[in-house]
Length: 247
Image (tube, rainbow, N blue to C red; front, top):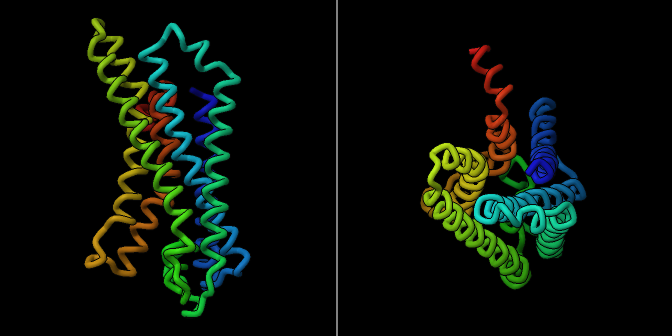
């Protein structure tokens, strides 16, 4: 579990470092500019870290499933080699996702100015500047991302259905409490990530506005990686005792 949490922490740090420092520097220096190369790098790293994090959360759902539903097989199914391979698959899928989106986005001709109405280089806003047929270029990357994302989401849901069935059959109340406390942080992180992304990209165009788009993009790009460490830290008894003492 701590191996996957280490990977999640690195991805959260990378994700928030891709957008926030540049936005803060622009705000402090009253500057709204970013170079073309910087915009390309920002798109690549944001998609890479964000995609890898969701794939890693899928792997963590499997880890929870094995720990609760197949505890006697945990050592054999989740050995160090298997964990390293699953983490590498999550990072590798994120790289492939980022390369596809970066190549398809920046191969377009941008002829509607150079002003991205966002605090970072977000792909939908970059596509608005294009005069090319974005659909044909983006369809491969979009199909790949949506298919992989939906597959991961279904896998997480099925895993937790099996987990809850196993937990509810436990005779011990203490065992049920321990199992739920192990799964709760992961469920909160996944729910926060999925709901913010779904609201960002599935909201009706009738309620869309520059200010709302800015707030929503902040919610899904900054809030989850900033809140994840706090959510997982709440399982640390020493931290909870220190918090109680402080309050």
